[in-house]
Length: 334
Ligand code: ADP
Image (cartoon, rainbow, N blue to C red; front, side, top):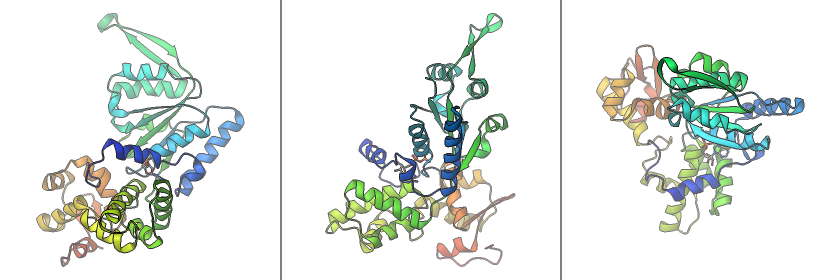
């Protein structure tokens, strides 16, 4: 995947889990989403009702899974975790739903990738806490309605646009996750450094916060890479200078763009004269999956004003040309 190399081993995944905020108060940033969630939770808790289904939408690594877990713990409920691609057969979902205890939270990551029959089963479950289990095949098949426990579905998606209308309508609210600003990211990094026991200096935190693509998961990963560098090549202290030297080794530039980000901009400028070019052509040119470019790369490039999406395709802005050290052509926008 398009995140910082070298690839994470299971040890690194454990570290990531240890850095996950557990309470709403530990969760940095996203003030709007936090306020909305608090209202939904306390409203339902006050009335003794099961809270509405919630959808978290936004790029990877912004805290959707963390918020789902926090939501369950604020409700003192257990959470069952699955993902869209894992729910290929409706039977898999039926089994999951019928095993829920009253009040449970069911978390479905990448919910936009769920197969259609499972999705249709989910409609009834979300609305009426029921599933229709189909027994048998062909003309003799019968469907048996089954009551399930009241639950709250939490969905996460990197593409709210590709959710079907009927599914989207069944969520009580959709929380749109935003990229984090550098002071919020510094806070994430300082918190992680405390947990990991890293000797982090203020200017080191600041440097990492400006280079992590507005994303806490990347902030934490860069912190670990910079710590390695600090321990191996220096005295262990993470200062600005050490952070800069380490991030250079990992091909992370001053804006936090990584190799794939720069490959996309470079292809746009060099092969397509700045665009517009269709996303599938662009994906072939950089040798990466279209969905990775759309869901991981583009949101940040758009946010920093390097790339524009137009009806005729993707366009590199003048800022992108300059960032690559090239002279923007007359027609370049921005
Ligand atoms: P997503 O589900 O959106 O891909 P995660 O919830 O898995 O993102 O977050 C990835 C990691 O980033 C978590 O393990 C956590 O350490 C960190 N993280 C994300 N959001 C926050 C936040 N708001 N405050 C602190 N850490 C965060």
